[in-house]
Length: 131
Image (cartoon, rainbow, N blue to C red; front, side, top):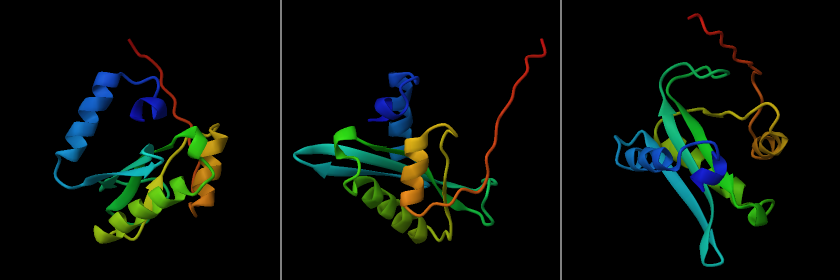
């Protein structure tokens, strides 16, 4: 599912990141949704202690990755995963949960809104080589 969420990423690196997160210091968590005899969704969260755009506290829970198999979208799977992340975030003592999405990913923007997230900022990043 991580490869489906981040198709341009290297599969070996995605696997290594997942193992590091699960074996880490407890500042990250992963959740899966199961139905029909298989996994139909996943969410990954972490605690971010550095400034997170649009938030006013630290640390904050951050929804790092969120994916639902297309056939299961619109059935409450994503909402249940976010609810699990919210509960984990509260258990860590945080009062805010943040996330991000690409500005042109309308499906993700709509899913975030449906789960109660409010848009706080729109940012465009730039780079310029200076060799």
